[in-house]
Length: 292
Image (tube, rainbow, N blue to C red; front, side, top):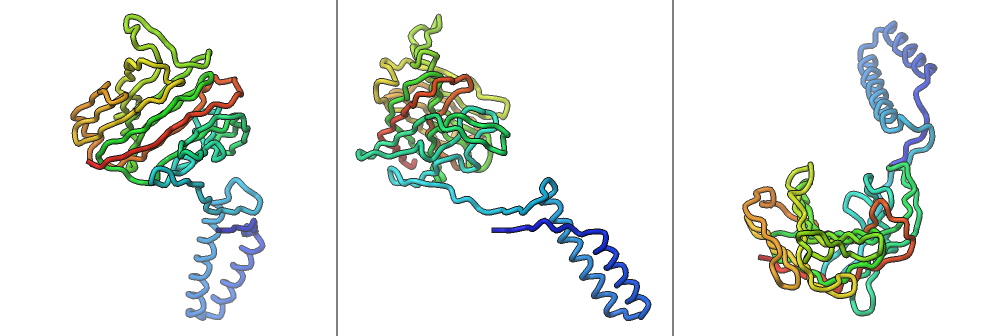
């Protein structure tokens, strides 16, 4: 903990330093003059740092390290928020609420959304929904990643299983992102690809200006009524996405994904236009990783 008290250097203090310096000069004591100059420089450097840190405050400033809440699940430690914080500046609906992350007696992970308004100074906004998110503390290398999950039911939700680099953003691999509609399910039929019944997509982010293109796939069942397996095989120069054991997308020869480590995230989330305050529950049976 670092504490700064509001006590700026006033003009009277400056005058006092000047008087002391003048008296030392009159006495021609060079040793004390040099010591006084060094002492004065240190004082003013400290004052400058203090004024910079508290430029917008006129009260006691307390800076302390906040310990992130974590859980142990499937052999790994998981934060109950992103590693950089618990609120997205671009999503003014939800915030990462530790109370929305639970593990039941079977070992299933539950990521909720619920009405839990909280004001954040960072966004100058009251975020209405608490959402469940877990971010693994382990730095993952190449390998196979899999969860078995049932997507949450409810209007305008945004569950996801994804990972992004520990070194920078991008790159990012969206193993899946689900987008529920105003009716509370994921149905979104678009012609001519009418067989892609549900808006559950994969994507890759290589540049900061967006993904290379979201793609859907045939699911065969309702993802909010059934458990399905979502997986990714990440290898040098190849990334393969699976749904229930079948390949649904392959990306090859993208150097941005090589020579880095990944932060795995599983989350429930609300979209910007969500006005339904009922709770939702994203249920995940397990997470599995095999190093390759």
